[in-house]
Image (cartoon, rainbow, N blue to C red):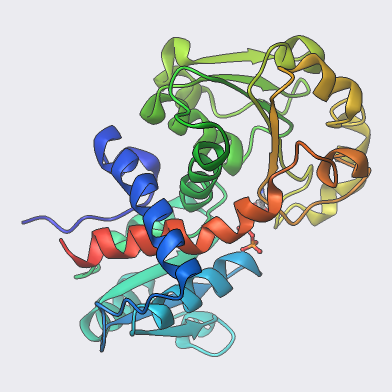
Length: 301
Ligand code: CP
Ligand code: NVA
């Protein structure tokens, strides 16, 4: 049987994704009750980080420990990857020793190359193209607070980046409508957008994009690797802040999410991220439970 990978939300079926977020909620309950659940004693997750991380590293490493397994942190600085060992060779070697691999890197083609040469499942823990693990947690969090996300309207305000691309895929897979409000010149990839058909509307006006929305979400203006563009982007995104005015255009029960790390008073006003509609701390915690559900799914294949 072909090895299952999780490089984008399109790698799993809608039903599989829905079961994962449901399972994540169960795992959350079990963890909160202090139940010991260790089905993966002796299993090892290799975590390759070519970019910084707080949530992703802590959630994957903790998740494996809670499951009774082990996680290995690997950075290019301390491995031969940083000295130019070819990625296919690295993938063959690492996957011959561990049970599952997680990678955070730059080009999306790098995780594809790794997966093509891996004998075990590979998880995309963020590339320049996508951040699918974050979306598992986001959907779980919406459902924890408001029930099924199917049929709802979600508004993504900001850059047409990896988060935006994963929101586009999530709209198709989880059955919600996505409004994207971005500055001109910062649109998501045209092919990814096209693949979502009428599940997604692209706009340039934040207020009309937010009208009646059930969830407002945003992300940083300059992603990892774009630090040099910070100033230019601050100017381009100046009218794309999620603030109280924008939240009041949304449904009165709308939630606010941000994958974090956040820059208060840039992409989001403090009053919103620290306000009563914000669920960002549950969202961050749910990275742990959602990825445990994902690890369980992939390790049990
Ligand atoms: N949201 C997210 O992926 O956070 P980290 O960069 O801290 O892992
Ligand atoms: N778009 C951001 C997400 C961080 C979790 C980045 O790639 O830096």
